[in-house]
Length: 236
Image: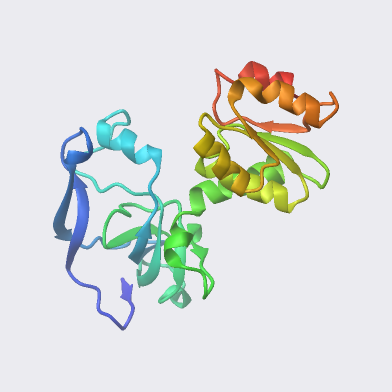
């Protein structure tokens, strides 16, 4: 293992450790050994960790995990140690990733080939929130269905993490975005991200028909599923 010169990597650190499944009370801040990066992996000094629903499933036992474990697949920070075979130029790099192991800790490990470089001037805490939801939103509007200027785009759950980012990205590409959200507070948040209309779910079909003169949307990004599937097809 190759380590950065300063500051030294400690032998122990603090991490959130889950020793039994359950509610938030099973998340215990514990002193434990700093993990050593495997071949092809790096050790990152954590600046921030992303919080995602998968961690609640792991913590509660919905997704089976070997106990004990430290949650966290998304995080950012500075590379402070390298596993075998990793390019030495990564030492000291500012990075973010969605493939971390144990990001709910002062250090975490991640595959070197799954790191995202964080430019100077970009806050590491903001960077930690982007890899999973940000790359999902980017893929949806650039690859799943390439959004173009003039398109009408529908985003369900428009106030969620992916929904807010997808709305901003589609708007930046010149699209007109219509979103759904269950409360006025959420709808206002969605409008702030660029939605030309943010409505309650029962009002979606009429809103899209009015905005498009009955032609319908070019694409629907449906992040809800069963309850909205029929309407999503209807508004196309």
